[in-house]
Length: 562
Image (cartoon, rainbow, N blue to C red; front, side, top):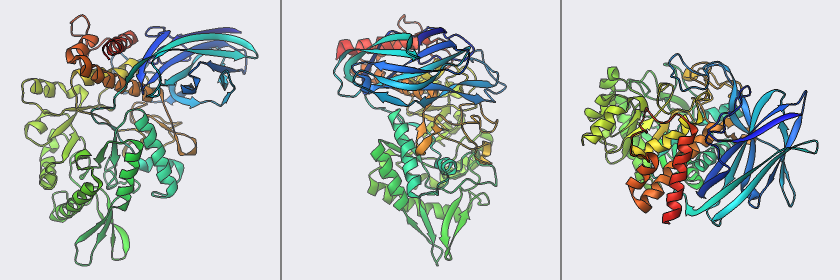
């Protein structure tokens, strides 16, 4: 059998029809305690028919080594009409993303992973993680990967991992990618708030936390996000509402309490409450269900005037009760509120009215919204702007002049297709990972993305099967709507893009650790070692070697100064 194999960087996306590059790959890796260090084994086979291999892992730390297959996924709409030169392709096709668990058997010497596909005339790859425990002894550890077909060793690759004796710290700033629990109920066919629903939700939250997400979108009411005007999404409202005989409101928080307890238990630090007004202008109310006259019915929604007295009265009663509950839960300082998502300057008046309706009740709480026009901040309408990275320059300039926001967040979505970091499947891996270095350099106060697990079409007209559709039914570039797949038994399957986000945030945490040891200038010297500005929001080295070398410099400095 004609066979080739090569170790490649985790930032490499191994397309079936193209030989991968070794740029950014290392035979000697390093990582901190509490970190996941990843690499890939890419291989090519001329198998002349159906063939499967076994992958052997031999290492004194093989209990901490996990091997998965990088599966191809359909990308019917890989990108929109606006692109730059930094895309791997713009053609629809099948491309690497999903990380598929393989059956494993073990003996005293090795772990053996079954059914590694040898597909004739194609490159494929295996994804290898080393999950370093926080108490692992510092030192160097060998990891050997063998591919075996019918008793023949096709390849043997050796990697050395240096474990540095410092623990990677937790994220200092919030990281949220919106959690859509209605999509989980739809995909798995479970009733919302059934015990199985709660189990599935917790599985997906645990995976998010494992990969350095620390803020959770919390549906106090069904989130008014990506919903067609006049349409609705499945009800996932955590707060029980009762309209009493005299027209006043009573609230029950048992489900919210359970959600918060679950989040805390999984490691969530911040709770992001769903928006109090509709998306793109704050002109209406979210769908709110209540017990009224003995039946459960909708009392507010698209037909509600957001500026009307009835909804304002409700909000005051609700927020008054909610604040008492947040105090009881001890999360007042960890709770953030939204007014409305992505308002434009044409909608500034309706946004202003909505903000005014709640600002007194929410005094002292964190408030933030995704928007991209500096005018909203300039007019005092948003406390913590979450700015599209392609529109962040005026905010950074104002901050440098002492006029900008103390806390400035970044986000990206379909609307950031050029120059800046993003996570589309057909974009290079370094384009996703560079986010961590940029967040450090520009001292961003948090990062937000809208789709951890959005398994609907655009405007939530109908559910989609994420194993067949990665683009919200042809609406958003593949990879924009979700970063995990709904796997078997109510547990997520991870993606290469999720692991790249993990690496981005781990880079950020390592830089924060080094700053504590040596100061900020030492970290900036790792990012730009020649003193020349090469890293900005829109411009950065477009290769895998740069970020590999940055992280090596950071790790070496940490090791020298512990």
